[in-house]
Length: 177
Image 1 (cartoon, helix red, strand yellow):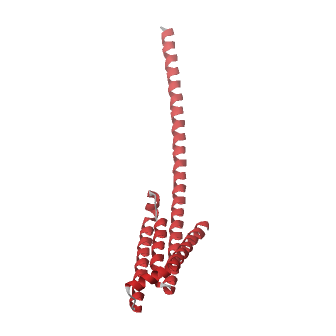
Image 2 (tube, rainbow, N blue to C red; image 1 turned 120 degrees about the horizontal axis):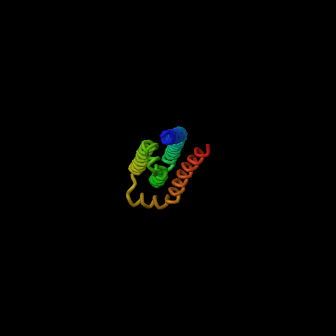
């Protein structure tokens, strides 16, 4: 019977040892998992911070580009109000191209994009109104305006191209900073 008791005791000891080893391995695995989670959280926080910073830079670049484009448009309005209508269309297309596309961009830049879009619409409307006011002030008829528009089509194209290039250059300059 003593032999049986010894065997039972050895089996218990072996079971305890296996249990203790398993507990130790589980504890080590848990510690490793907690460490990996902590590292992942830290990395995610860093990436989020970088994403916010890049979004803020994009917002600033877009604002600056819009301000420069509006300034250029105001200058063009003063020089050639009839050409502004075409320039306003080109400016609207350029600003539309700068608006956010992805969900992340929409989340971080969406409000600024909406404001830029509204500003572009106001600039376009102002240009259109200024052009119409100039036409009315000059007492021009629809046919004479159409003739002048045809003559100024080259100038309007150049004005639109100039406004688009100025805005594009401003965006490129801001992005390279």
